Amino acid sequence: MIGSKHISRQLSRSAVMQAVINEGPISRASVAKQVGLSKQVVSEIMQSLCDEGWVRETGRTKGHVGRTAITYEIIPDAAFIYSVDLGGTKMRAAVVDLNCQVVAEAVEPTDAAGGQHIVEQIGRVCRAAARLANVAPERIHFAVVGVPGVPDPDGSVRMAPNIPGIDAFNFCEGIRTELGCDTVVENDVNLAALGEQWAGCGADCDNLAFVALGTGIGAGLILNGQLMKGATGAAGELGFMAFGADPFEAESLRVGAFERQAGSVAIRTQYLNLSGKDLDLPDIFERAADGDTDAKTVLENTARTIARGIATLAALVDPDVVVLGGSIGHRAELLAEIKSALRKCFPHPVRVEPSQLGKHAALVGGAAIGLSRLHHTLFADGLAGVEVSLPEFRAPDWEGAA
Image (tube, rainbow, N blue to C red):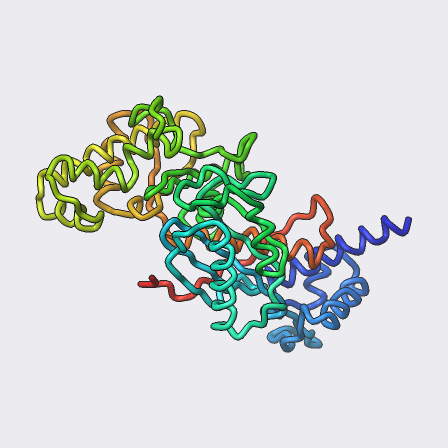
């Protein structure tokens, strides 16, 4: 009986907090009406939330006949999370408050040494972001780290050829120790898919595929509203689809046959073979825009290969939208070529859109997971089956960010 009373109390507390998070400033009477609890129970819970420092009074209702009522809102800086996006060339860390507001971000080139050096760098970049926001480390309760690979149950990260050494030890435990808070490690493209569904062009889509095109190639899949990971967590590893380059070559087992033909390294290699010039990707795109025949040929070939990958994905999972991101996925000229090629190789229309969140998509997805977990732990005592909805994501001015 005591256990059932505790569960009932925690469910009521969670429901009250959800109303404050999503509708605040809100009065106790309005909360009671929304969640179906008595005014007395709501008042008791609200008082305890105020005493614990999660909720505060904000004023009184206006424009109503009769007595005014005290309104309440969440205290945004009562707790924070880290959201980290570990890329092959760049690492980003953001500090996010309880109201889904990014309060600081720090960026560094990824340490090429990999392994334990990456763990220490994540700690350094996270602490730098916390200092920018004047947030003490002990006020940060949770961390989500996006990685360009597949997190293993043993804590290591496999299938991450661009980050050496993180498959050789318990990477997740290393981050947890370094940051001093509970930590989840998740595939970065899965996080990007969640980010686009929460705050990007996939909002309100129950079936979404986020395809990241860059040094690596991968997809995050949300089907019927659920993130799909597969039996070993490797669902969406498009780079390893068995076409493009020869899938039976040893390099295809390390990097992936599709990635070898459609990734950024492949674009540079194709252009070098045609023109004899070794150029960076932005230069190749610029030359294509200027009419360079070799550059245009490379982009057309790449678009056709990518279109085949998207068509394969569409045939298997039938998404509402395919969102393209990554260092080359956002390029408008490549997107136009992909859409043209896709119409020629697939019999049904496929909606393909560029990422709205750009290079911050994984950070936003990490914030979604981290804040959901934090709210669930703080206000529902970790009870299974409790739904947590988040308010609208509040991004800083990321225009032109590095």
